[in-house]
Length: 347
Image 1 (cartoon, rainbow, N blue to C red):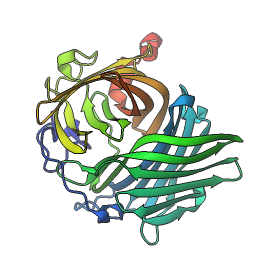
Image 2: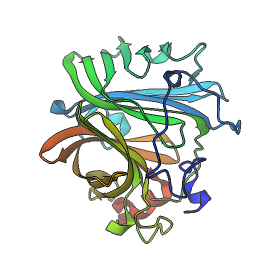
Image 3: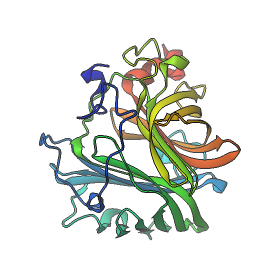
Image 4: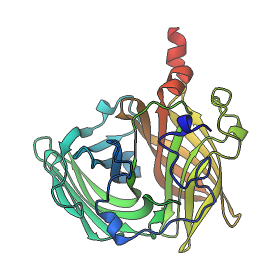
């Protein structure tokens, strides 16, 4: 894969196609705080905090995303709450998104984003975070506590971690009251560029799942060309078997890096929306994990205008166990235009 094709996902220290099979990096309590910008000093230097909750019995997902731009000294921030399948972000039951907000004056272990009526507090670094939203004008509020069920998994090469958490709290959605009692996977990144350049590449998925306090997984991967995805001839730069960027399995207290992801995404009739995901994960100890996912709630979000991400609440099955987690399927212009069934009908 060329540097141009892989821009935005190829990071310093990675192998040609990612970090598959490399040791996970160390994560420090200080990584809950703001970091120095990318060494390049480019205005696209990025730091992110991603939290959320899932209430599967109601087909409901909540996403909380804060995107820091340290060179520009602004942040983007959003809260999304939705049920079921949505064709547009604005169909969500609740959306509150700002592209341009003031940068935090101090740090981010205990701060408030006034425009969203959102507060985030790191109670115990890498172990517990508490988040509150109180939008009185629109009748939406929640209290969310996230307690780690595993150590943070640092991406090989650093600058990023993902961590499965136990969620608890309450949600008041326009007078409907819900208990938050499940699992989620949080995510943090810092110290590198995130350019908004359009990419010539197939969809890449950020995938997480939690089956209980003893079992969770994460993979960031393209579909495997060896499984013949529809786009395989259009994007020949990804060799078969080299589609995994990085990932892990946490099982019975042991955190293990992945070396392979046999992944294929089945899409709706529109050619774009994820419907099912089949995974065969292989860790560095050669243990195989065959996991099947079915999307139960979904909404599209243009994180920036050159890219669309389908946020998908996914029901996972593994050896008779049921788990839940996000599939975030990231798509760019060339794939979307070429493989959308709607685009094909309009020509």
